[in-house]
Image (cartoon, rainbow over all chains, first blue to last red; front, side, top):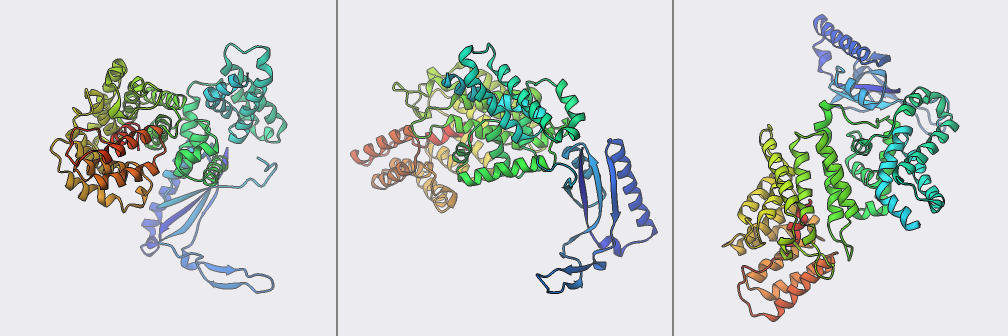
Length: 122
Length: 430
């Protein structure tokens, strides 16, 4: 078993067209994803939808006593912005990639979670 | 005894490693245990060489792995996996699992190639570097990066599911092709490395057994089989390697040629039925087939080969293929050699990838010679001589150079062109 974070990236124009109908449609997609994960014998350990990138604030830590600089976010301006994440437990990368292919987002980064408990020597 | 163990290392290392990886899933640990098995063979075999060395080596390596796994704290977490693994015996497709793992799309492509040559073929890091024309530091870095990715992202040691096999194939075919090519082509005074070409062939056959309807798999296998068919013709009286143009075709293995042609035909048939049409390995097989069915260099169907190179260049834009096409076009009876020189060879000289490529000046020299421009031809032969790393080529080029200085300018369209070396190599890939 291995744990991965799925970082979901999307075009943010979805937010401009947001209404009850589009919201429901998105929920249906995510529920289908959830069902697919379960059917595959994998688990969703966590996840959240994030508010759009214009709502973000960035804190940049300086060296030594220099106070952090706070600015309007996001950290990096990209065409596709980070819109949410899932934490998935899967057998291996192949299973994770198969699940990611069914995850509702334009682009998904699949990042292994670092195991901070127990022996890290291997 | 050391020679016997070294020989076993050459032949069995990937098989033993693959079987051990199946158990450990940790490649570094598997490599250590595999190496340890060979070290133990050095002390144990003098007392009696086992009947089946590969079985002995595999058992020792796997026992080493089990001991290491028991000692490690990883045991607690891995216990459920371990119970399953103990029941799993090594499988004959383990080396193929290893190659698919090494060629996983999550691994950067340059790293896939380096890792496969290291783990599946058993090349040392230095040998990987010289096969790929990269520095040893780069080769080492790519291999380490790939292993880390496999461990960190939990890339499984498994064959891809059947609906994914096709797409995972491209990288695997490239690596097997490269493996064959590095074994087939003479470097320095080295005879051709048959254990390497044999390994590439067995991997190719295994792949064809798994994927009998994949045109590209069959295309690659056909190309390798047709190259093997020429085996007896490749060596001259003194054991030196002969170029394709120089070989006695009566020595070619007719049976193997027939097999190769059958596989090539099937590859083309299957490829033509695909949405994209025939692809590069099928085309390479077709070119190899045209050479195999020609009774001599001079009577080879050069126009058809040139057309094949058009198709190949379309799918695989590469200056090497453009050069091979130029060579084929120059060999078509009645070819406009000045046009080939001006429109096809001259532009390649400005390509930085071609700066150290022997066959460009060699082909240019040949065309100049046939045009009667002997002093210019001599310059190109000399340039080719400084670039070649092959004894066979060096001999051939020196002979040509000597002839160029001796003869009066005259057109000689039937003489052996030095591009033969390019076409021969081409049988196994650029």
